[in-house]
Length: 546
Ligand code: AMP
Image (cartoon, rainbow, N blue to C red; front, side, top):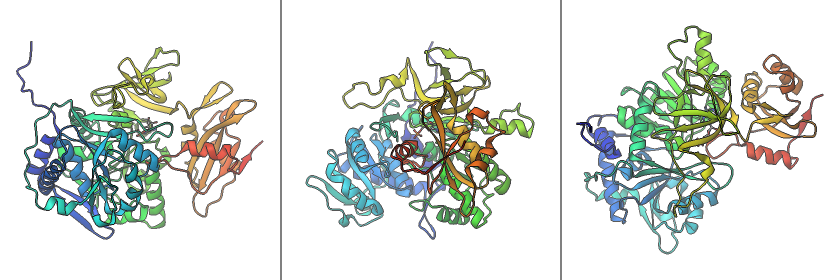
C-alpha cells in the first residue's frame, strides 16, 4: 500500500526559498577585521538568483561542477546555496591542500568555473595553469585584473558579472538523489577521495544538525562558523542555519585567536564550531587577555578527539559547554554528538558521557567489526572498527569513469571508518584511535589519543601528540611530542609521573621530545604522518627515560 503523502523532492532550492522569505530577516555577516559586512537572507536569496543567472550565462547547467577557493564569508554562503539550488554541483576546494593536490581534485571533479577570493588570487594563479577543465574564474572581493589567465580561461569580476543579472531565478525541480555538492577527504595518505552529497542527503543531514540530538539550533542563534566551508560541508552548518533561521557569523581570513576573540566580543555568537586546535589557541588567548565568552551557550568541537581537560577549562573558567562530536567527510559529517542521556544523574555520570565521541542519532546505524570480520557486541567493552550506514553516509567514492575507488572501505553497504573504538549499549561511541595510529606494543594496544588527552591535562602542556615508533624489544612504543605553554617548564620525568595513576605501567611512555609546534594538516588536525617522518629523519631530539 502506498502512502497518501505528497512526493515533494528534498531539494536545496526549497531551503533557499524558505530562508529568503519566511526567515528573510536573519543574516549572514562577515568579519572585516574591524566590523562586519551583513547580508539578510532575503538579500542572500536575490544574490543567489543573480549568481545562478551569471553561472548559467557562463554555460553552467545541471550537474556541472562549480568550485570555490574561498574563506568563510557572505559570498561563499551565496555560492553554497545558489550552485546546488540551480542544479549544479558545488565543490569547495580546500585552500590549504598542497598545490598539486588542489589541482588534482579540481581536475578529478572536472570543475568548470571557480570562484576565488581576491586575497587568494596569488595562490590560485599558480594552480590555474594546471587545471585542465576550468574555463572561467570569478574573482570575489578583489581585483580581477590581478589574475592573468592562461589561454582558454576567462576571468570575471564577481560584482560586475552579477550587477546586471535579475534577482529572481526559476530554480528547477530536480531529483532529490542528484548530486548537490562534493568534498574531497583531507587524507594524509594517497590521493584525496571525492564524496558526492545529494540534495536529499544534505537536506536530511541539515535536519539532524539542527535537531536536539544534533547541534540543537534555534532561530535565535548566531553561529560562528570557524570550521572552513571546504571541510566536510562545514559540518552542515550553512544549510542547518538556513533551515532554522539562525544567523551565520563568518570569520573570513581572520582565524587567529586574537581576531576571533575580537569578532566574538563584537558579535557575541551563541554557538560556534571548530576543531580542537583552534579552541586550544582561543583558550590560551583568553588566559593572556581575559574576556567574557559566556554568550556562547555551546560550542561544537570535533574532527579529532577533544581532550577532556579542554572541555573542563571551557566549563569551569568560561561557563561555555563544549559538545563533543564525531564525524567524517564521508558521513556529511555528523556521525555522533555527546549529549548525555536522561539516565546520567550525577555530575560524574554526565561527564562520563560528555567525553565520549557521542551518541549516534536515529539516522546513523553503527556496528563494530573485529579484524576477522565478525561483528562484536555493543557492550561498551568490546573494541572493533566502527562501521556506519545511513541516508547521509557515502556508499562509494566518486569515480569519473565508474571504476571502484578504495572498494575495501565499504563492507556490504557499510562504510568502514578506519576508527577503532567501542559502542555502549545505549549507543555512545568511544574511540580508541585511528587503526593506523594505535600503538602495538608487544602485542598489546596503547591508544595514542588516550595518552595525548592525559598529557594535555598537565598545566605546563599546550599540545601533545603521540606516535608509535619502532622498538627492538616491543615492536612499537609511544613517543610523546610536547609543546609547552609559553614560559612553562616540565621535564619528561615529571610528565611521566603525572600519567602514573592513569595508565598501566607498561603503557607509560619512555620516549619524549619537546617541539616548538605540532605539524597540522590542511584542516588543522595533528599531522602524525609528518611527525613520523621527522622522527625517521632524526630531526627530533628524543629523551629516553629508563
Ligand atoms: P575528516 O574527514 O577530515 O573530517 O576526518 C574524519 C576523521 O577524523 C574520523 O575518521 C576520525 O578519525 C577523526 N575524528 C573526527 N571527529 C573525531 C572525534 N570527535 N574524536 C576523535 N577523532 C575524530
